[in-house]
Length: 156
Image 1 (spheres, rainbow, N blue to C red):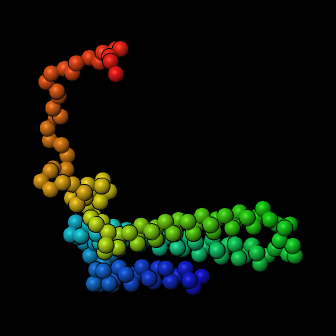
Image 2: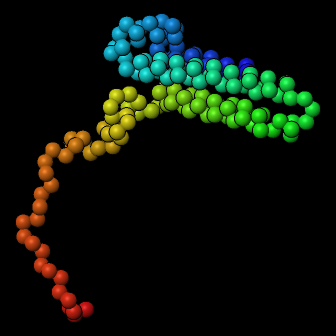
């Protein structure tokens, strides 16, 4: 469908604007030097996954249309077969939309620490107190004197 192809076009434009080069050039650059830009590697990877999901969606839609075109007369007679193909389309839409969401997240300039190990662990520096390490480096201290046991029947 024309609208579905627009999804790929929009993401491709956003990627090209973000990295300042065409998508084919970016793919080649990532293949040659994958450690140069982890952000580019992830974006290229998810764009490829999105393209795969988009083509699967288009095939599922084409199959559903073909089934609908061959059903003579009343659709209720062939309901089960039609629903199988409609379910495949729904699953393909969900897969495509999920991958598009990940790619949208990766391309969002306002997402803090989108790339790197801190992005997925929630260890963003802004969430820590200044001067404290990410992980505790010393064991917690134990109280030196035991507390007095609670007394039963104490006056109120």
